[in-house]
Figure 1 (cartoon, one colour):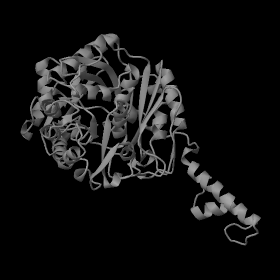
Figure 2 (cartoon, helix red, strand yellow; figure 1 turned 60 degrees about the vertical axis):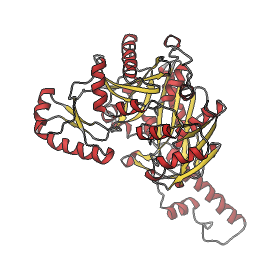
Figure 3 (cartoon, one colour; figure 1 turned 135 degrees about the horizontal axis):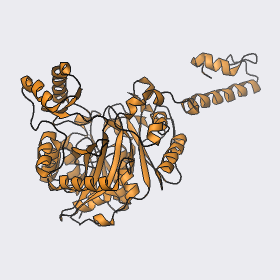
Figure 4 (cartoon, helix red, strand yellow; figure 1 turned 45 degrees about the horizontal axis):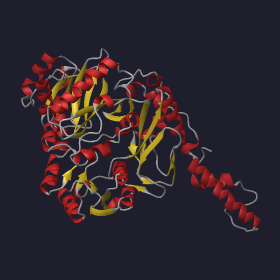
Length: 504
């Protein structure tokens, strides 16, 4: 049985996995790069080991070093979290060869679902609906126009080994096809080392809906309902919710059955997510399967009461699932907002730096999964997501209102964050009415970028002003003749002049 788990990841997901380990009485082992020496997951774990320099390739992606640490620490199992090596079949194979339990699916499942062309072909064979398109890699540019004409514009070019929006190109007219094809192949080769590209019919105004599935080693399969993930920017999810506003009981049953069929086609074990595109007529198509825990898993946990990390560990231990499909219910409504250290007013540029002050939201129905603290320096080497805020309430409108309140309470100084941007999403008419698709952000960008300023952006300056005024007042009281601020000079104006701050 598993007694010690090495978490091969960083940030909020590493802390989140370790919390479940602690509740289960298991010891946790952290790995960290030199840039993450003071990170929260390092502080939280029972043991921690440095695995290399700041760059991911030399640390969090260093399979040999991670296996070495697992052996030295005598870890029984490795949990990969998400990102990094979580869907890397070579890593899973190395873990298995080392005699360590990999808390995840089989190597076969990772390989099959990791290649989108292979997965697409398997879904067709299994009767799971897929978007009309090619079944093989398009390796002959001369055939491009013929294939596209047969499918019908608009079409989407996709990297077979792709993910996160990389290697994807939307083509609406034939004149743009060849250039888009070359760009997709080039980007795929650079990002994944594989330039295989296929073509699909582009679904206009789709909804991105995914189903959480769980399976054990005894042939038991369940789905834990859907998550609506259509609020995206550049194919990256920003806000998720469950249940989906689009869903009907009939559609949920059909999609849930197909999600389980997809999992069964690769003898899946553990937690996974089957993603679909759904049009306004409720036609749905298989998109891909993520063979890992998802970033947005907390909203499923909140509405079903199932700790997915504990379930993963139990399945890895060879235990049967503790629940059947008929035992599962959706209770209330949950929303997740991803919080990034980025400046949305500057083209969403990452904003690494030192967190000076932080106040996280609390209260009824709230959960915050994060990893930053006051004095922590957010490194520039990794993904800028610093936390996830999850609200729950009996109804969707209450969950939205609760999220608004939470985002109002959430204060971070020292770095720019996406808190104002996601707060604006909660105010957008289309979102509030549940009438949105994957084009929501681009359709509402003007509204989302014109939020009213509150003191959030200025609270650090205000604190400095007050401290400076206190300082100058003490100088006056002591009859000090300093030139910092004389009796005939406004301390406010003097400080503003020195700091070139005129907005207050």
